[in-house]
Image (tube, rainbow, N blue to C red):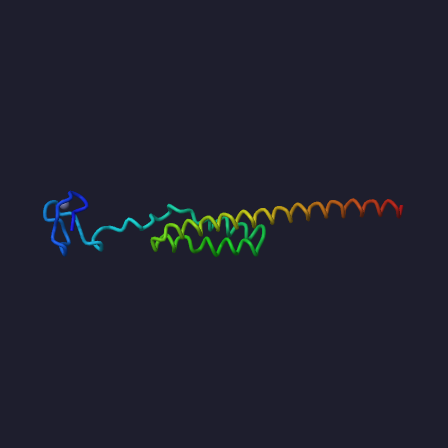
Length: 125
Ligand SMILES: [Zn+2]
């Protein structure tokens, strides 16, 4: 087994390099796969905010994705964590967009309802 640090050939079952002392066994070497905490945004806060303020069903989809980002990252599944992070962000925006559209439509309907009520009042007069 070659030492990844200095290139010295060691015994196959050696756990440490005989020359430089670097760890050789796969279990000893710190895993490069682990994702540092906080590296991948989980979008949990915007997901919760959009659920409360905007659009419940799509916001919940965003929360479901957001809640699993940290777990995936902790398990070393970088691609999976990124995927769930993207989905959480996407569904947060979808929920926000739909919530915004419905808010505008509601405001428009209220506005025209107000106008028609006024015009009907004018007819009575
Ligand atoms: Zn070495």
